[in-house]
Length: 88
Length: 101
Image 1: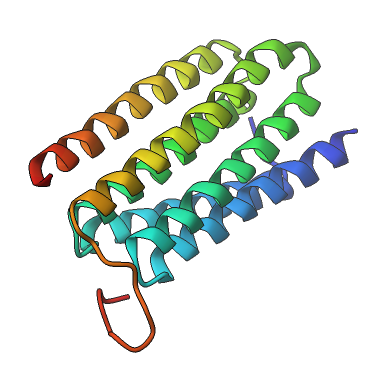
Image 2: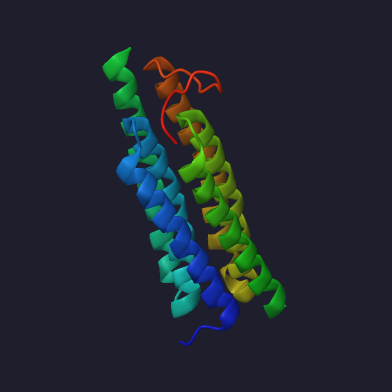
């Protein structure tokens, strides 16, 4: 399970993206900034779990990615609707 | 074929990283939504395509995941934008310094 140089570069770019999203998640001025950051983080996580399936050579992780994407979508929409209902 | 798959993997991860950089640097909720969602969607598509070129027998599940991301991401981002509009966040403009970066 050793990674080649290109795969290592891909993992490094994903790590940088996750760090950027977490910084925005921590210091976003409004609640919606944090929701946007969480949404982007969910997309990155879905793609990363699919990549994990390739790394471990085990297609079960693809089902995990699908379920994670579904639950993250439901969470994002619920959060946005709750904020919307709060104010207007 | 392996080289093509690796190139697609790196392109996808680069798109995701650039989209997250936009999420960090943009001045406003709407701009951040634009930068984060679309670039991350395209990056996820390229990453899934690269994985599919590596493992050709996984195509159906990868296609389901790709279609799901492609359908739900615009719906989620438009819901967030609607919530921002209704809760009264004004779009950023250059002369009124609103919202920090």
